[in-house]
Length: 94
Image 1: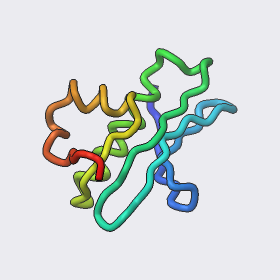
Image 2: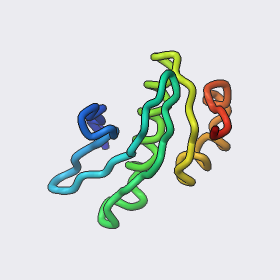
Image 3: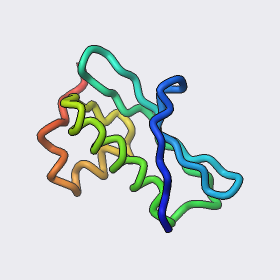
Image 4: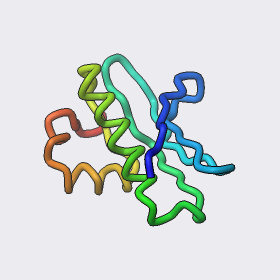
């Protein structure tokens, strides 16, 4: 399944629509730090890699933009722990 994930800067979230459902990953921006706060995937999309795709999109964006990342969301924190290529952008919460 190919997902078209967008960065909705007005709502401060990465999001994707699958059928009539929307999954998203909220963030807060402060200076050059992006805090990833909450991932929400409708239960009907669970187990299809949607949350993983959202986490990857947000982290790839952070790398491309030279941002630091605070993975406040436990899903994203777990993702980062198993994908060492993102460790360089992760910082502890202030």
